[in-house]
Length: 289
Image 1 (tube, rainbow, N blue to C red):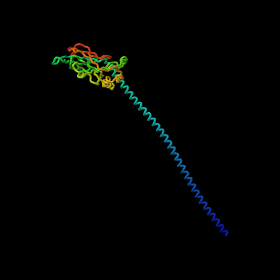
Image 2: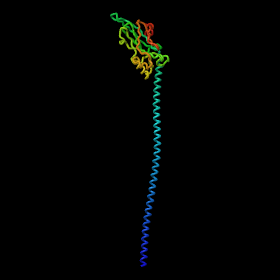
Image 3: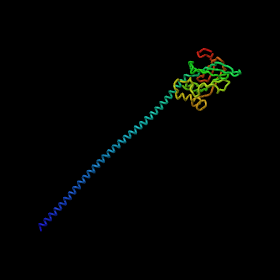
Image 4: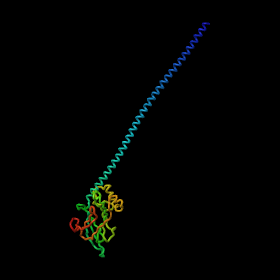
């Protein structure tokens, strides 16, 4: 019996030891799994932290690059604005240069001078109506024709020369303003006392620059504007006043035509038209007829 009890005790102890061994192994296995899981989680968190740090760094770099880009865009916009301003300033200076070039040319022409040569005069079949043949030639300061002479026949023994004259305000003349220190004119037409003025012969082309005022170069925008709007000054008082014009009107001079006589037409710098006898009519070689 004692032996049996001893055996039972030993077996119970062995079973207990076995259970303890199994339990210990389970605890060890569980602990090992736990440690591995914790290390894995820490590794994941470490990598996540590294990624978050990298994202934060890239975000800062992106913001810096965006700020730099915005600064460059501002600089480009400023440069574009400066370039546009420079272009506008250049255009202003070019226009001013055009104005001064035209002014210099106009200052050289302080008057318009032309000659009206009475070539012949004859009556019609009834002996009443007179036809007068004249030659018109405009000359420069050296006496050279600015355009080929033109010959016209008008009805009547009195010959009229009609012109549109523009006179600038006195203070422009007194100050020697380069564009408005001298009167300007467009010769309109030549006609006789026995015909209506509208039936006369046109001299200067309407809305065009007279030959004596031409610079010999391509007309500038300023010149085109000046001559294209010449007629408007006579019709629009407000426009004329804005341009410094004190008078813009038609003006005519006439003579009792004497065959073989040359008459001198002139427009002084600050005066109107005048016509006076000059002497005998010369031929194209310079001799008198």
